[in-house]
Length: 300
Image 1 (cartoon, rainbow, N blue to C red):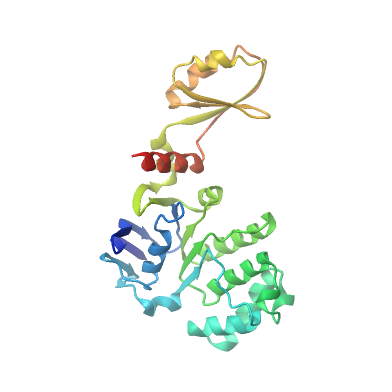
Image 2 (tube, rainbow, N blue to C red; image 1 turned 60 degrees about the vertical axis):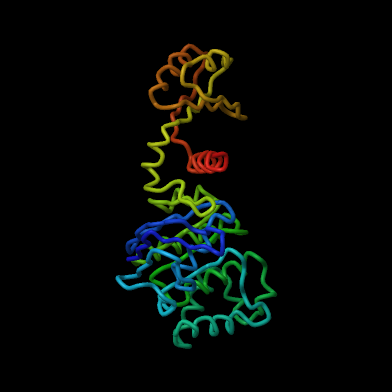
């Protein structure tokens, strides 16, 4: 189990992370979100024992985390950080042995992952000869080569097409099923929603949102109503109490209401329209809540 307790870190006068706490159990995927410069990378480095927090404590399976835990941790950094002038095989030998993986095991695991990611022909190619998408696969394999118990993924889907994104998704799910702990960070919040049960959102080092995603949505209260009908009278919808916003989309109209208490009022208007084909009440996507909370924090 990973426990982050009241952890803070600063660089001189800059407060990079302020009093962050969360717990991660085996088989859980946790979302650590935020805009660029919010404090995510600093948090990752503290979790891996690369830097020590100014206050608070981070423990992994009951002991204070340190660089000695590196063999049990896999980290996929957002920026590509591969040695590009050597072959994929030599790169994995180098990185795997840094984490005390036997050379024979490294090659077996490398062969497995190259086959799974459909890039077996690149084993003896120099990294610089690979496309950006395939370099991303190699960086992912580097994070997995030691079969980590804690896997930290920072923007793992960057630059991937939908097919390869699905390959990564299935791999992450497999590690979850094996009991690995996964910390996941991405600006693609639809993936965060599909992976994570709990999240923390950082902004300028401060926690501005935390908890189970479903509870966060319920507390947010606002709902979106998707409506398809002929000859809609938008002025009558705008006049409904509790309607916050109306957005006309190519194939539907989205009506945002302050809470579910106003859904019936909207329906009472819509039911009088001609040929109503759709009236769907939708929870707000996580991206909407994220933008709202970050914007309000910046204005505060």
